[in-house]
Each structure stands twice: as structure tokens, then as C-alpha cells.
Image 1 (cartoon, one colour):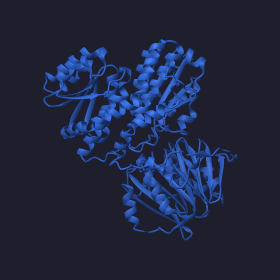
Image 2 (cartoon, rainbow, N blue to C red):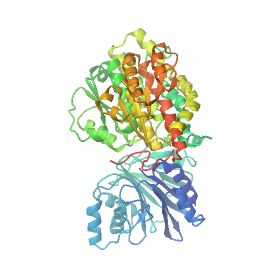
Image 3 (cartoon, helix red, strand yellow):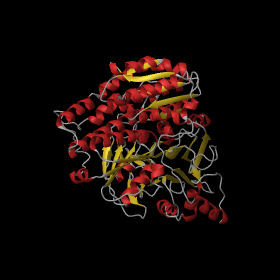
Image 4 (cartoon, helix red, strand yellow):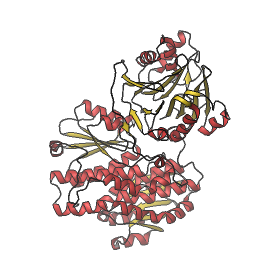
Length: 613
């Protein structure tokens, strides 16, 4: 979960590296460091804390270094955040320097053996062993030394390596952690994510597992780790560089909430027939025999993507009549699930690099189970390893707390559920056409939901000082409540819990005391009376209830009367309410975090892409 940037060329290395690290600081911000070639030796500078600390410590130093450099922003896994544990890491001599994203699982035994052979370590990290291994096996060929070093390690890695002995070269290698190679004019670059290179190039190689790149200013030589040449197509980046910037918003998170309507419009683009009578998933290429024959689906994801997956489970079971098991990827991969013929896995991931989800995907494939990925990032590990991919086209999401990615995931899963129902004949033509019309309305419904922003901001500022918030919902509303409570925890640091409202009497009611805020989602007419009963229960204990209901719905009038505050969201088919109902919850978390003075885009202890267990 770290950011890597590297430069080799005729220009000044440091300005590009620092600018690239700023674009990647969302990937890690416990510490930052750079290594640049300076007068035939490598200068190393690193600092605990945010990238700004490193910049301040440089004070113009090394700004004129030409030709070669690497940089890193860290999210700590091995060793506490400190200057010593910050990347880059070097060997005993300082001649070999490494940046690393991932985890070396056998680092402890490697470290002990290296110490026995006389190596001196300066950090607590797993990464430093790689620098010492390279030092030990180097015989005049840096690429060969890196190959030999990685053959001795177990785990995940994206590596950028420099040596003063070969001052015109960067060696990059990847296993399980993302790494790209940017292609420039008499200069080339490495990075762990696309935004870092957008200011320089739109052409890149996206390295796959087991691939290595040797970069000089004039060439990029690709191979596998064994040294056999590889040939790859150049990936043309279509993102607008401005899309990775805040665009005038105070935070990326608020910008990305407002980008939800466009993101959904893009996700729907080309996937609904011109006459709005059919869902068209030609880009996914699901075989007809798979769609017709699937008897069970495993829905696997982590965090926010898992909450989206739960809404997908609900829709698929309701519409396509296929049983769905929803699992947290970190649990699924260790529970020895029973998978076999007739099963299918759907994995959901914004980044496409989520380690536990990727492991679950690979386990399914090992057992011969086909995998469909709902993923935002083209060329990511999950989108490459899955058999079929339904891309969400949300564009770059920079804030750690996911917003527009969640909305597009719920919409993509609605498309999938509708497609399965359509192809399996579990929905009649009139209902299919009506429901597709509802799906088509979602971009506008999200835009209309954003009109609640001022009201939600007022409520959030009022309740920002509280210590506890509870979320209630029934059916699909419960899954949205789970996402709402996660957002409050993530960025406002308020203890929050979501409960299926029917579970109140089974324990949680003991926590409801005078004045405690309760967010009650009541968008499902089928359980209106039950939800009203649960709201009455918490009101009887003097809770303050904020109700979220569809606007203009007469049948929800009694619920409105029970609530202290009511947020009316645009009405849409109840099965599609998650995409709309989550908007006020995202805004509530955002404005509560701002009122509490939290770092909205970079919440403590969290990083954007969880590429380790």
C-alpha cells in the first residue's frame, strides 16, 4: 500500500519524483523518502510523516540532481513509522538502493542469515533484506542481481532498484503489487499508479506478475524474472490529468461524491440497448452456457466493496433466483469453502489490487470456478486474472474513503443481476423494460440527491461532537446502513454501528440512551411497518432519529412523523435505492469529519489500496 516513483533520463530527477509522490500520497503517508544520483554516488533522504516533512528537510538540496532517482511514500507494515524505517533502503555500502511495495514473508530468516554473514541492518523493515541480497549477489549486472535476489524471497513486491555501479539504469520487478512503466522522450519512469506519470506521458507498460523492466533514458527492456524476453502492447492512458486533481473542491472526497452521477452514467454507457429493452454486456463476454447453468454464486470482497457486494447478493437472488453466498475475502480464503461445478465467483474491488480478494479469486480459479470481476482499474491484477470483467469506469478515486466507486459498484451489480434475470428468463419483458428505465434514471437521481448537501451539512455539524451513532435498516437498507457506519468510522473517527433493525431487541437496544443519534433508512415499502416499529422503539428511549425516506411517498408519512429530522431522497425502484440512499450518508460522514477537524482524504491508519493481508 505504498507509492513508488522512479525517473531515468536527461532531466532533473527530484522535481518529477516529488510531484509524482504527491499524486500517490494517498497510497501511504507514514513516511517518505527519495534517492537520487549525485556526483557518482547515491544520496538518500527520508523523513517520517507526510511528504511535506521530507520537502521541508530538503530545503532545495539535490534539486539539480540529473538523470536518476526513485522515491517512496510508506504505509507501515514492518516496523513503526520512523526516519530509519522509511524507504528507500540501502545495503551495507550504500551502493544499492531499493523501494518496495508489498510484504516479504520470509524476511526474518533471510535477515538472520544475512546478519550471520556480516551484514549490518539499519531498519526494522522487511524491505531492507532485498538491498542486502542484491549487494551479496551482484557481479556487475544489476538486473541479474535483482533476479537472483527475488528468487530467494517469498511474498509480494513491486520493486524499484538503483545502483551507483550502473548510474544510467532502473530495474523494476513486480509480483502481486502494482507497478507501471511510463514511456517518455529520452526519459522513462516507474510508478505504482497512473496519476504519478500523467503529467509526463500517456503511454505505459503495465507490468504483470513475474515481469521485470530495465529502464534507461532511451529504452525499456522487458523480461520475465528468469530473463526470457517479453513483448507487451503499450497501454494508452485516457484519463484527463485534471481528473486526478481536486478541481476546486476542498477535498478529493467531496469532489468524488459529486462525480457520482457522471461515474454512473459512464458505467451504464453502452450497456443498455438503444430502445432500453435489454441489458447489453458484450464487453464482459459472459458465455451463454455459464449464465444458463450457474447454480450458485460466491460474492467476495472487502470493506466498502463487500457492502456493495451485499446489495448485489440481494438483487441477484431477488431477480435471477440464483443463491448467492456473500463473504469477506479475508475470511473466505481461509474457510475451505465448498466450490465446484456450477459455481461462479464474483469479486468486487475498486483498485483491482486488494490482496485478500485477489487470493480468493486465484483459489476459485485453482478449483476450476469461473470468476467475474467488478473492478474500476483497467490493467489491475484482478481485472487481468479474472475470467470476465465488468469495469465500473468510475475514473481515478483519490480519497481513501470510497464514494463514487461504491455507487458504481452497486450499479454494475444491478446491471449484472438484471442481465442474469433477462438471460435466464426470470423476469418478464414488461417488468424488464420498466426496471431498465429505472436504472437509466440513476445518474439524474444521484444528481438530485446531492441537493441535500446543505441540509446534511447542518445535521452533521450538529452531531459531530457525539461519541456514538447508530444506523438501522431492513433488507437492502441494512446493507446501505453498513456502508454509512463505515464512512463515519473511517473519516470522522466516531464510533458507529449498523444493525438490521429487527435485531434491536437482541442486544443493541441496551445502547440506546437519551439523545443518541440514530440514522434510520426507510426506503423499502415491503418492510415499512416493521421499520416504523423499530423507529418507535428507539424513540421511546429518547434517541434522536434522522430518517432517510423516498420523497413524495405517502406510505412513508407515518415514518416521517416519528423522525426528528427527515432527509427525502429521490424516489427510484426499491432495489436500486442503495445507489441513491448512500449519498446523504457519504455527505454526513464528510461534513462530520470536516467539523471535527479530521484529515478527510487521508484518515489515520488507513490507505487506499490494501495490497497486503
